[in-house]
Image (cartoon, rainbow, N blue to C red; front, side, top):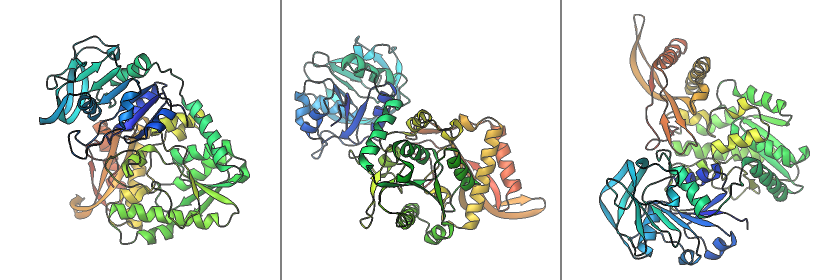
Length: 512
C-alpha cells in the first residue's frame, strides 16, 4: 500500500475533498478514506498526520459516526475540522451540545495564543463557520488558541499531544488564510515535505495503467472535453497504438460544430479516432423523458450499449477508460464516507452486470483544476486545456423537460452566440464556466408590431476553482446586453433572456 503523508478521514462533509486539494496544491500528498477505515489499513499507509473532516451528523447521536479508536493510540498529530473538532472534544472528555442557533457564514478569528498552526495567520482573519453543534466545555489538557464573536472555542489544541481542532472550515475559499493553516499542520506539525506534483502524478498513473492493462486493449470514450482528452493522452503515453481504441460518439447532444472540432483535435494529437454517429439512437432513448435523473441514466446506459457494440468489433478488449473526476463521484454517491447524494453522473457507479469491461479511471481522485495542470504536463494544447467544462450528458441537461431537435437547436445556437460574445470581449478565460439553458417556459413578447409567445433562455456564468463551490460571474452589463440582443434577434423561437445569479451551494452549477 502506498505511503500517504496525510490521511483524511471522511465523515461526510461536501468539502472533504477540498482539504485534500488544498494540501496537494501545497505539494503534500494525501488521501481521503472512510471514517470507519480499519486501523491496520491506516497503519499500512504510514501517515505522518491525520485530519478528521466535517460532517452532517452530531457526535452525541446514538448512531454518530466514530472512527476506529486505534487512531488515538498512534501518537500522530491530529487535526479535527468542525465535526472532527467535536469528536476530539467528546473523546477526550469535553462536552458537545446542540447550539442555540446554527452558525453559517463568515467570522473573524481572534487568535488568543501563539501556535505553530497559526504561523503567518493575521489576527481577525476571516474564517467560514458552518455548524449546528458546539463544544460546551473542552477537555483537560486542551486550551483555547482562538475564538470568535459567536464561538468561544473556535480553535483548541493540546500541543503536547500535537492535537488541534477548528470549529470552522479552513479548506473553503471563504476562509482567507485557511490554506496557510492546513499547510502549517502538514509541514510544521507533521513534518511533511512538498514532494507531490502533477508531473509525478502523471508518471505514477501511466505506470499504473501499464500494470493494469498489460497486453490487452482499452476502449476509451472521448468527448473532446478536457477530461476525456487528458485520459486519451495518458493512455497514448502508456500503451502501444494497437492497444488503444479511442471512440467518439456523436450523440447529437454536443455544442455547435463540436463534432468536427473533436476530430480535428485528435488528428493534431496523432491519436487514431473512431467516430460513431448515434444521434437518432440517443434522441429516441430520450423521447418522452423529462426527469433529469432519468435523462442521465438513459444517456449513460446508451453510451455503454454503443461502446459495447463497438468493442465487439475488436478482439481482446478488456477495459473501458473514462474521464471520471472526484467532483462527479462526490456528487453521485458517498464512496468514501456518509455524504449525501446530490445528483448521479452517467460515468459513476460502475458498469452493468452484463458488461465484462474493467474500468480505467486515472482521474477519479483529482479535481478539474488539477486535470488542466496534468494536461499541460502531458503536452496538450493550452487552448484545449482551457475549454470550459461540459457535462457528460451534454445539452440534454441544459434543456428543461423533454429533449428534441427543436429544443437542441435553441440551446445550441444560443450557447454559440454567448461563447462568441465572451471571446470577442476577452471574457471567455475570465469565467470558469458559461453556458445557456433552455427553460421551456414561454412568455409574451413584442417584435415590431407583433405579439410573440416564445421560449426563454437562461445564461449561466460562474466563477470557481474546482466546481465544488461557485459564485455567479459579475460580467459587465454591456456584454450581457449584447448576448441577449443577439440571441433574441438571431434565433427564431426565443424572445427573452435571463441571467442566473445563484451560487453553489445552494444551487448546483448545471440546472439538471
